[in-house]
Length: 289
Image (tube, rainbow, N blue to C red):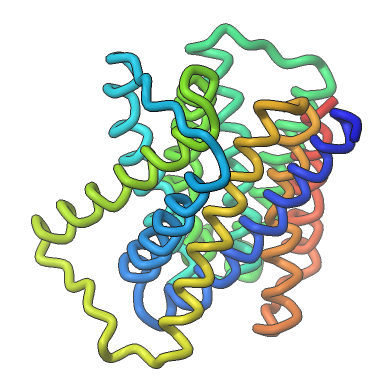
């Protein structure tokens, strides 16, 4: 099987895995809250990732500087998803998912500033398309026509989430290159659980799911397995394939999230917001070239 084909499959796996996870995260963040939804899904994901040890080898030779980076990666990933799920809790899933595409812009910006990576002319065009699309998708245009500037609900929280994801993916790239895809997945998820437990203790946040229905509990567990699988697939793909193919395909996850929201939740978007969603997604794809 060719490297290009494996890269495409890996990207598609990430796109569908994260797209489904984000859609379910949006649904259950509204039902049980963003913190519980994220914590229990990540715990389920950690358990699933631990099972992968029986099928793949794990690198336990971790340098000191990576040990320092791992908790930072866990914290910024947690912050990203908590803000993202908060946006889902209070906003329109389609609009929030489109706004989250800004993480690709932040990722490139940080890579440009701190890692010396540069964008081609067409990649710069892709970034401009993402920003323009997000602006179109995230503004409440009826209020603007009435001379009241207002962001759609959940957009501010989602922009913060996108910022933290931008930080995370640059750190994750460095860690994965040093210790491999499975070790990175496991250690980061373990760090996420420890951080969330400490955070819950400090702010007196309840984690109990006894009042949730059996269906909700099962779906949250399924969310975690799907997300962990997506992370593992993409990280594995990056070790054997081409990042220039994998990343933009996986980054188009909002296509899946938005389609599911429109089909199952009957999300309503205006024509301008729909144009913005399409423009942002197209911008992500353009950044691959």
